Length: 353
Image 1: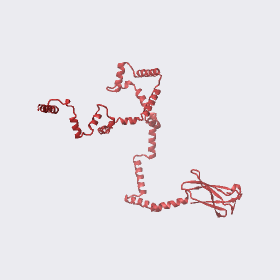
Image 2 (image 1 turned 135 degrees about the horizontal axis):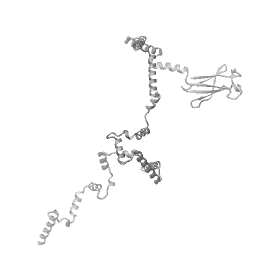
Image 3 (image 1 turned 30 degrees about the horizontal axis):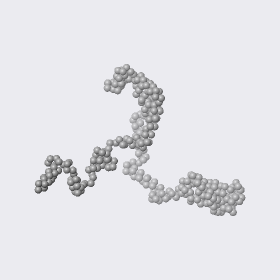
Image 4 (image 1 turned 90 degrees about the vertical axis):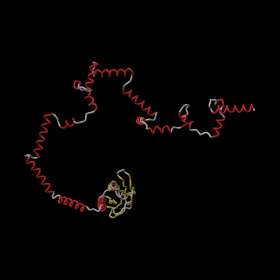
C-alpha cells in the first residue's frame, strides 16, 4: 500500500486548515486510464493531507492534487494544483518479497554463500589443491614453455601478426576480401558460369561437353548462334500472335485459377486424388455402390439384382409348371413329351372303350 502525502500551502506557507479537503486524481500511465477520480484526502495535521493507494506491481501512475476543489479561493491559484508520480515497485515491496522468497525456499543469503564456500573448500581438499597453488602451477608451466621455446607471448603474437600481414601483401588480398569470396554463389552466377564455359575445356570422352560439341560440329552450328535463332523465332511467333510470354503465362495462370475455383479443387487435392487405391478400397467402392444407380439393360448390376429377388414359393413353382404351354415341351425324351404321349394313350384307351 502506498501513501500519498500532500502539504497545502498558501503563498508558500502551510495552511493548517482548509474548509474543503483537497481531492486527488490518479491515472495509470500504461494506458492513461483514470483509476481514482476526485478521491477525498484525509487530514494529517500541520497542513498535511494523505491518501492511501494500492498500486499494481511494476506499473507507474501519475497523480494531481486539487487544493481548492470547490473553487472557493482557499489557496492562491498558483498553489492550487500539485503533481507527482507513484511507482508500483517500491523498496518496501522488494524488502517484503525477498524475505518471503527466502522463507519459501528455506534458505538465507549468508547460509547459501557459506554452503558454496564449504563445497569449494571440499573440492580443493579432495583434489589436494588450492586455488592460489593451482593458478601458480599454471603460470609456472606457461613460463617454462616460453623459456623452452625462447619466446614470449607478446613477441609470438607480434610475429604471427607480421607473418599474416606479409602473406596478405604477397597475395594482394585482405581478410574481408577472402571472407566475401567465401559467400555462396547465386543461381544466376552459377548459370552464367556454366553457359560462359569455353567448349575447348570440355572435350573428354563420354562427357556431356564432348557430346554437345559433336552435335554442333555435325550440324555446323554453335550454341550462341542456335540460341539466337531460337530467340528470334520465339520473338517472331510472339509478334505474329500479338502476345508476350509474361502475358501468355499470366493468362494461363488466370485460367487455371478459374478452373480450380469452378471445379472446387486444388492442385494438392488433385495430386492426392492421383494416389493409387488399394484392392480393399476398390472392393469397398464396388460393394457400397447404390443399387438404384445400376439398372441399365445388359449390365452386371441389373443381372445381380434379378438374382437377389425373393425365392418363389412351392405354389408359384407348381403354377408355373402346370401353366407352361404344352407345345413348348415336345422334345423327345423330355417329361413334357412323356406326359403328352401318356395322356394321348389314355384318351385312346377311353375312346376304344
